Length: 370
Image (tube, rainbow, N blue to C red; front, side, top):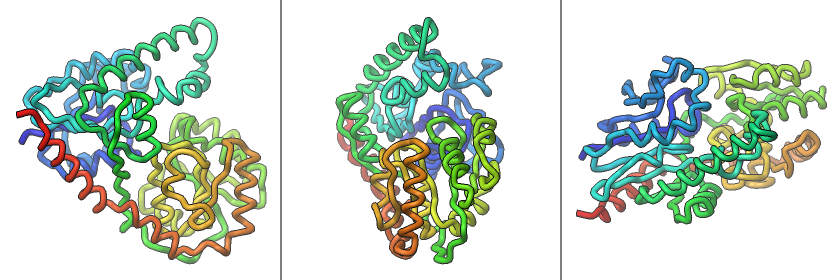
C-alpha cells in the first residue's frame, strides 16, 4: 500500500513534529510532503533521513525567514500536491495539511493538532501581536482570515477520520468543522525521562519563544519575585523581548539539546507552563521526571495535570495570577509525591499511541469505498 504523510511545514522540532516522527516510525515506507522544508540539520533525524516533497513556496527567496507570511498562498500550494497514486494519506495538521486533495478511493486520516489557529480561536491574539488589528491593515487581515477560515471549513470534508490530540482540540474540531473526532493523545517518550526525586532550588520554563507560549509573562512574573530562581530554555523571535523582561534571577540558556533539558526537568522544583496549549508535551515530560507543573488552567494541561496531585493551575495569563500560583506552590511543595507524579505521566506513553493509531488506520481502511 502506498502511503503519503503530509505535514504543514518543516522548520523546527516541536510538539507537532514529535507526533510526525512517531507516525513516520510506524510507516517508514511513506513518502513525506510539506509546503516548505527548512529543517536545521540538528533536527532532521526524526524524519528518518527522508527528503520532503515540497511546494512552489520552497523556492520563494524569503520563504525561510517569512514562511508564515505566505499563508495566503498555502491553499494553492497544498492544492497542487498530486497524491492520486496513494491509497492512504495521513495528514499531520495544525494549519493547511489537512486540506490536501484526495479522492473517494483514498483513505485520508488527519491527526489534527488544531484547526488553523490564525483563522479560528486565536485570531484576535495573533492580529494584535502582529500589529494588524486596526485600520486598513486590520481590515485586510480580517478579510484574508475570513477567506482562509471558509476554505479551511470547506476542505474538512476531504478528511475521512479526524484524530484529535486532546479533548480540548476535539471540541475545537466540532465547533469549526461540525465533525466528531477520535482522541489519541500525542506520544511522549517517558522512558527517556527518568524519575528524579531530589529537587533543587529553581523553577524551569522551556519552549519556543513565540507569543502564545507566554515565556515573557513567566520571565516578568519571576523578575517580580527576586528570591526565586527561574531557568529558561529555548529560542525564537521573542528572545529580545524576553531578555528585556528578565531580572537577575532569570537565567536564559537559549536552545539546549535533549539531555540538558532532561537534566533540568529532573532537578527543577516545578515546571512553569503558561500557554493555552492544544496538548503540551513538555508538562508530561516534566511529570515523567517526578516534577510538578504550575500551569495555566486552560487547554490540554487540564487533561495532563491533576490539581494538587501533580501540579496546580493559575486562572489568568497575567503576572499576578502566576505569582499567586507560585506562592501557593511554595506552601504545598512538600505535599507533592514525585512517584505519583511519574505514574500520571505513564498515561501518555508512546506504545499507547502506536497501538491506538494503528487501530484507527485499520478501521478507516475497512470503510474505504472499494
